Image 1 (cartoon, rainbow, N blue to C red):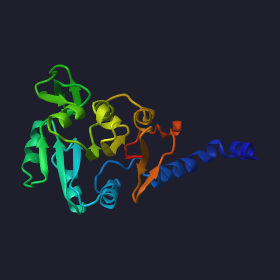
Image 2: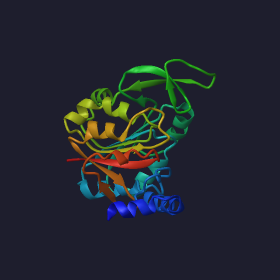
Image 3: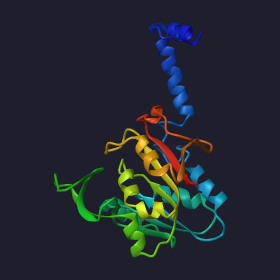
Amino acid sequence: MKTLIRDIFSRPIFQNFFEGVLVFTLKVLNIGEGQAVETSGEKNVVELLNNISDDKEIVVFDVGAHTGEWFHMFKGLYTKKAQIYSFEPEKNAFVELSKIKDGSLHPVNMALGNTIENKYLSGAQVMDSANNPNSEEIKITTIDKYCSDNNIKNIDLLKMDVEGYELKILRGAKEMIKSGKIRLIQFEFGAVSTEKYSMQDFFDILSEQYTICRILKHGYYPLKSYKHYYEILSLTNFIAIKK
């Protein structure tokens, strides 16, 4: 029966209808809705932190902080104490970020990755050498090194908005992840990425210690195991919750 139904509806006349169903389904799944902080469902991550955190001050890493858009959203929703380390390597964005007057904000003019070195930034591209007059030299370090240097024992939320460099950052946090020192990891997956990687890569790195969830408009949905159809290159936000 299933084969008969599939045979009937696989004809050209029905394709426009099912494309419409597909687009609607993706929106319901919140796939491709990761562009704007206000509408992506990222607020649900802050609510999760509110629910699972006690009165102890938490530590947040905002990686790819830009000029502080996510910081303002977080501060408007999180009801307890937090120290927020906001990493932004791009000079002009960092200048604006540094203008925010808030004792909980620690602006850091560095990029995070899996190496400790200097490279060049041009737009969202990180390169070994300057390829145009607008390129600027940036410092890169790892989460493991930064935490060691600054006596940071735990990270309650690692939020990344880094145009496809998420996996490098996670590889540079190998020891913190292995020792269970990072509680929540928020990351993006989608077409804006500048590095080639797959959703399976995130499962390979995280699934042993974390439950990976897709962030929804209202809450989040656990992805119990990797499925090949998760490889949809449309910007979507995910949260990995330590088991």
